[in-house]
Length: 390
Image (cartoon, helix red, strand yellow):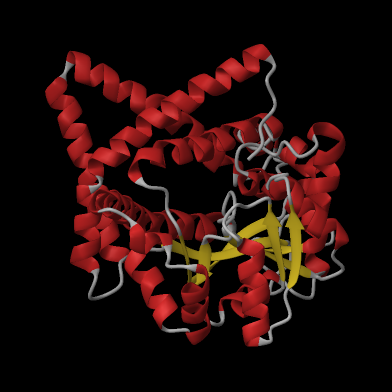
């Protein structure tokens, strides 16, 4: 295990050293006085590692299941072409953080030595704002992981990108990404590096998978700073389209292949000789993506279309037909609520559905954030700004 203290101001290094002394666990600690950012840190560790797999875990994320890592590594090497895999992400609520400390004597001793958790010193207003964010993200994560991402895996065998807070990579594949990006853009892998990395894998024909039933929990931004985080995710998606435009343009290659009868023929040679057949197996390499496209790229095209058109349509409807705008929002909220109810754990269906319905105003705000990200992205393209780094 390697812990990187990237210029923090919260005594991370001292806490890690003390925890290692108390538990006897071997922890390699890297301490920097000045922060260089997550992307350069991951790159340096990847280039220095000789391991077959590398798990990147954010400092604000905990693993809920003790077998989270083993399940991810197992999935990583189960099928051909899997480059990254992650579990289901859920918000790490204040009550859960306090419970984690109480369940571990070592953590209790650390709190006693270094001071109480910041969460225990928050005001009532701060706790309420955090609760609103947790409510929104809980319902959204359920819908994303168990409806959208699960559907993507069943249709295409891959997600567009992994959940970067707790993700396992094949080290060799991750090294390919940094070797490709280094001469072109350095460490400017978009505003959220995991989205760029996931798109690189998809562009190369590799896969980003998700292991159902294993969860991690991550701290969520409080409500006042939530739009900023949503902007980073949305803008990173758009920036990745710039670098891997072959993916959203796949529709034209796929249609050409259908019309000419040559769709993917370059990769079909030798398929009959494979001893292990796997339904999502596809030719690797960006050359295939350029010539024939990737079906996964359809998700990129649809997402771009949705980010641009849906908020614009709602704005126009609100101006010219308020009743129709209200009906559209009500229909979207109903569909999301029903979907969340269906996929939620038994015993939590009504609570999860109520969270999704109650978070409708926040989802509407997120549409405005998407539109702002699109406008900023277009401005960056026009002005030549490519300093995109988390």
